[in-house]
Amino acid sequence: MEKIRLGISTCLLGENVRFDGGHKLDRYLTDTLGHYVEYLPVCPEVECGLGTPREPLRLVGDRENPRLITSRSNKDQTDRMMGWAETRVAQLEKEDLCGFIFKSGSPSSGMERVKVYGLNGVPAKVGVGLFARIFRDHFPLLPVEDEGRLHDPILRENFIERIFALRRWRDVLKEKKSLKNLIDFHTRNKLLLLAHSPEHYRQMGRRVAGGKEIPLPELFSQYQILFLEALGLKATNRKNSNVLMHMLGYFKDRLSGNEKQEMLDIIEQYRLEILPLIVPITLLKHYVRKYDEAYLKEQTYLNPHPGELQLRNHV
Ligand code: SF4
Image (cartoon, rainbow, N blue to C red; front, side, top):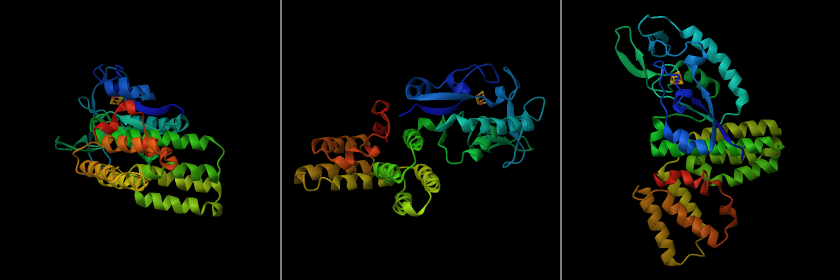
C-alpha cells in the first residue's frame, strides 16, 4: 500500500502559524497517526497572505453565508480568502489526498460549529470556516474530521478506517481497470461494507454483477461514489454485531457447542457495549487462522488499519 496522504491544518503539526504566532500541536496526529500517513499542511490565513502574527478573524453576519472579518479593525477578508481557496482546492486535486484533518473552531479551517457573530455581537456555534467549506464543496465524499472530534474513539476509528480503505481503493485504480479487479476488491471488502451500510453493499453488488453491461470507466466511477458514501456512514455496534454473527456462521460445523456459546456471549457483550470490538475480532481471527478459512482471511474487515493504533480497543 502506498503511504496515505492527508491534508491537515498546519498549526496542528506544531508550526507557528496562528494569529498570535503560536501553534496547536496535536501529538496524536504527529507522533502516532503520523507514522502511517504523509501530511500535506495547509494554513489558509498564512497562505492567502495575512502573515503571522496577525489580527484575529471571525465569521460575522448571515449564518449560511458569513463574512470573514478582522476582529478589531473590521476589515473584510472574505474575498481574499475565497479567491485563494478556490485556487488552492484546484491544486489539491493533484495531491491524491485520502482525507483532511481540520483545526476545530477556526473561522478559516473549522469544519463545523464555528462561531458566527450576529449583528448584535452575540456568537452562535453554527458556522463552517471559509476554506473548510470550499474544500468540502470541492471534495464532497473525501473523509474529513477535525482534531477535536478525533478525540472521540468511535469517530477516530471510523475516520482512520475510511482513509485506509480509500488508499486501498486508490491502489486498485492505479492498476489496469478490469471487471476482475473490481470483483476481487468488492469481495475482499464485503464485511467492511456491511459494517457501514448493508444497503450500499447490495447496490454495489448489483453494479458489479451487471458490470459487463456498463463501460468500465463508468462502472468504476459509479462504484467509487457508492464506496465512499458507504464508508461515510458510521459502523455501529449493531452493524458490527451482525457482521460478527455472519463470520461466526463460517465456523458453525467446526466449533464445539461450548466454543459457539462462548463466541455468542462475547458478541452479545460487545453489542451491549460491555466489551470492545477487539475482543470478538481477536477470537474470530484465531479461528480464521486455526481453520485456515480462505474467504475470511482475505477480508479487509479483519485488518482495516494497523493493530498498533489499537483503534478497536476503544470502540
Ligand atoms: S486554524 Fe487554520 S488558518 Fe488558523 S493557524 Fe491553523 S491552519 Fe492556519
